[in-house]
Length: 449
Image (cartoon, rainbow, N blue to C red):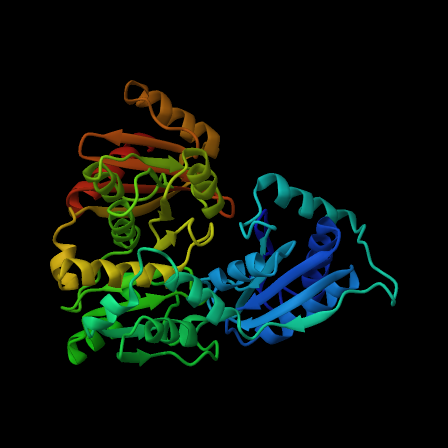
C-alpha cells in the first residue's frame, strides 16, 4: 500500500511506505507552515516510535521550531501538552488502531485540535513544493522534555467540577484494563489510581508496541478482557487502542457495552450536569439521540472525522461530543477524543447512581449496526454516480448529503460513503435488531445491483 497522505498527517508501513525521508519531508513542511514556535511531540509504544521521534524532533529543530518531547503518552495527553505549553502545535507519532508495522504522524494546531481541511492542505502543498524553511546553525530550535505531562493531564481531569474522586474511591471499584501494550499501559492504571480505584487487574499493559491481539477495540478482539472481568468479578473493564483516545467498556458480567455506547454513557453523564447540546458524526448510533432527547437536548450530526465533530460542537456550543468508535470529547478539557476523561465520567456516573455497570447498560436502548461494502467495478459506475442514484431514489426521505448519503427510516438508517483509498462504497446501517440492520443494508445493495 502506498503512503496515505491526508489533511491530518501521513500514515504507512514503516520501512516501505513510511520512510525516514518522507517523515522528514512532511515534518519539515509542518514546521515551515507553523513558521516557528513550540511543538509538543509524543508517541505511542510502537517499536519504530523512538526512531520516528528522533527524526521528527531533529527536523522540527532544523526549521526553527522548539520541541518539547513528552515520550510515550496517549494522544489526548499530547493535546493537553499543547495547551499547557501554549505551543504552536503538536505531533503525535501513532498509527492509531493499525497493526504494529504501521506508524504515522498526526498533526495538531495551536488549539490542540487536529488540522482542518484548509490547514492540512496547506501543509501538503508545502511538502510537495519542497520549499522548507531550514535555519542556519545559530537559529535552530532547542529540544527539551516534559516528563510531567501525564500527571498534568490527570490533574486537570480531577479538577473538573463534576469529577469527585472521593465519591469514586468510596465505592471501592475493581477495574480490569487491557491497554494492548500501547500508550495507555501506564496512563490508564495511573488515572485509576488517581481516582481512588485500589483494585486494578491489568493485562497487556507493557508499553512495548507488541500488540497481543488486533489493536482495534472491536468485539471480536476482546474475548480475553471479557473473561478477565468475569474471573476477577470486576465492576468494569476498560480497553483502549494503541494511542489511548478510544475507549471500549466491559460490564461486570463480562459483556461488552458496544463501542457506540461509550459516548452515549458520557453524553448521559454530562447532560445530567450541564445544559446544552451534544454532537457526533453521521455514522454513530441513534442511542446518542435518545440520550439527548431524555435530557431535553439535541444531538447534532457532522461529517465523519474527529475534526468535523469538533467543528459542529463549536458551532452548536455543545457541552459534550464524540464518535461512535469509543471517542469521548469533553470541551471543558480539550477538543479531542480522550479515553482518560471517559473513564472518569463512567466511574463517576456509576458511583452517583449506585448501579452495577450491567444494570446501567440496561437503561439504554439497544441498537445494532451492520457494516458492509460494495465494489464499484461490480456496478459499472463511479462513486458519485452511485451516491446520486441513492439520493434520488430516496428523495422523499430528504437524505443528508453532507458526507456521502444518509437515509433515515422510522426504525433505522443507512449511511453510504465513498472510500478515499479503495474503489468501494461503504454501507453502514442500524436497526433495533441485527436482522433489521442487515435488512436496511440489503435494501440499498439490492437497489444498487
